[in-house]
Amino acid sequence: MEKHIKNMTLSSQRADISAYELIDIVEKYNGVLIPAHAFTPHKSFYGNCTRSLKRIFKEKYNKILAIELGLSSDTFLADQISELENKTFLTNSDAHSLPKIAREYNKIQVENISYKELMKAIRNEGGRKIVCNYGLDPKLGKYHRTYCEVCDKRIEGTIPVTKCDTCDSRNITMGVLDRIEIIKDKSETRSPDFRPEYKYQVPLSFIPGLGTKTIEKLLSKFETEMNILHKLSFDDIEAVCGEKVARNIIAAKMGDMKISAGGGGVYGKVEAKC
Image (cartoon, rainbow, N blue to C red; front, top):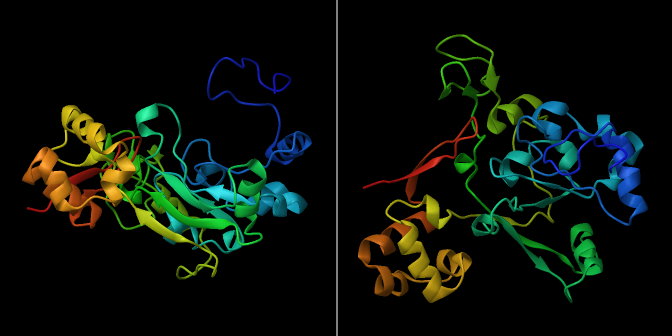
């Protein structure tokens, strides 16, 4: 890629090559091109580049086996676009920092840990498959709703929001929810039979009443955030961190907390109902 990018040591560099050409380079090295955070504004395919991947990849479109949904979208939203019905959905987390690396992930059925088996799962071949997608409630994502850059606020209007309801400015960062409403071609969500369950999870750092020390205490006892969010009972958590923390974690797990949607690069916020 040094032939196409001016400074390989900096992140987010533009390449003087199209996605249509890039797919050939990826295939040359036995890779597979999977669009990441496909609906996020600024630099994603659907976010602001195109209404349809077929327009970009043309006859190579069938070589796109999967898309990664991003923090601000989910299966329900993505399956309002008919051209994605035969694509595998992945929920992965950007590895900008290790503590956040598993805030979104996939449960995958394979016979062994190998690239070959992973590709069979992505292709839904031989009984290999994505069993479950784990991810944030999209409202917790940084770009779920449209944000006015002039007023510096999230816009709460009826989707799709295309301008600020306060200053009438179009200097906005389009939200994923609003963008999908514009480009979708289905009147309702319809998912193919092979589509796995999408399980919402609220990262510990988002849950009210859980500071750094409390999270470290929980991880010291139960090893992973996944164990804490999906396997433990109220009594397990209460024995380590008390009733209030246990109540909040279980409430978040059960979807029994109010979420204020994120936008414009600001995460959504979880609030206890009581």
